Image (cartoon, rainbow, N blue to C red):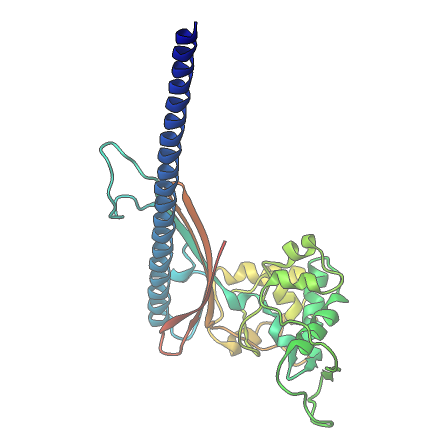
Length: 322
């Protein structure tokens, strides 16, 4: 009986040791698989970023070619405005692959004229609110069926966040409103979502406004009358109705404005009281480039701001990945 008990204990001990050994080996294999998977994910993410950098170089080349083709005008039928439809890239990406292994690598993108959107940085200069610019923003909010009183709140936010010293008493220009800058200063607006810090804005209003405003790193930028929307074109001119602006946008698809004089001669805006109350031009320097990369199980969406110099050379201001 004692011998049989010893044999039973030995068998149970052996089974426990075997189970423990199998568990340890399985855990090691699992950890190794996790590490391999993690390295593969890091490699895929790195490759997607390199593809985005390549797409940016392509965008810069397109903008340079556009500056050669149209040195004085930026229009919506330019080569830069042609979107890149989803294109397969797996045949051009060098990476090891097993037999019959297939990777789904695609790239798509588009460019948008950043100066077809209202630059919120124009609302204030050196802590002084620009009254004419506030009125333009008010009319834009009205055209979008949003509360126009939010324009003054945004202008105050922009003015308080500026780091330049306020102008001295008596040096404010016409239409400028100095604001108080004592106390804690708010953070400057960097993206449209930052408007949520302004009382009265909701996520729904932000989405409604997203395609019509932008925050550029430069104040005093012009709106391009060849690319602005009807809502913004109507907001630029105090006496221009939304229906007339829509008609001008439709006509612009056939004939673009060659220069400011060509635009000023239009009957809808001719006359000093009808001309835009904000800076405008027929050529743009800032552009938004959107890229979407899909590589196997990795995905990367990127938005980049590009600025084109007078010689046509384009540089990247910032890149946001999401």
